[in-house]
Image (cartoon, helix red, strand yellow):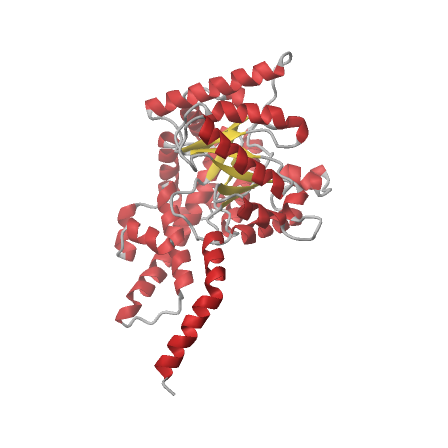
Length: 415
């Protein structure tokens, strides 16, 4: 028996047997498509979006730091770092709040938006028009966040017409392809298929390139996590989106309320929330769809002790999300930006020495260095470094010195 000949024949037969399965897996699980993921999404009611909004939020965040900044030990606890790293970390955060305070802005015409009394359709039309004008002005001035979009109303029958109207207005504004639509309160795979149909039609109507309009799904109904058949609906939603779904965003309070959790106990770290987010994580794994945690409604405002308590809660929840593989979350107030970046930067800077050392050992393994890490772990290590670079927690020079490969090589390793 010729082993080579038999093995070749067997492999050819396996190729034939598994060709359809191979194609389906590659189509359904293409892996991370690369590119930057924002560390947060800031939701602002449409009628409050004005030109220069990102810079204004940054100024408010810096003013809060100046007025309420706790002592160095408390800052270290907020960021989860050693106290000797506090000064350098604060300097990085202050720089971030000056040059790029908002990474992802979402114009909200859903729950956060309350139209003025009277002709509510006209009021929302005016708010959407003013918001798109403000975004265009910031783009021309070079002051727009790197990512932005709109959260329309749901596709439930009662809000469907208004949702379509705002969607048409934004699609017709000819904003850049960093623009994304958030579809809230999704309850069925049929709604996702309808969203695909809607954005395809709008691309034709407005002469946009195919695939230009992309959307996120908000997971804030129990039906989105588990359907009547007992299956994970959110997984089917991802695969029904025809590659246009960019993210799954957890809705803390709508989901908790739908699950029957009393208002006093609704939070990002409730077991009900963890179950939903674990299902989301599994549904998105390998698909290229990004995950975002939700928000906390306990804001750091008021007297100093109230601000400090709000910061402590927010920072703890941000760190918790990062540790659980949710690298993005929602922010609802300028005073949440300091702890968003303190906790995020602290996470990546704390992870940097070990991740860089292990990755360098892995890359040096061909020359005889003993290493236990596998390729999947190497991708995870590279992912931490790339995300740290993207948000400004790490600098390219220090990463290159530590790992001996540049940013492009790191990104290729992640993919």
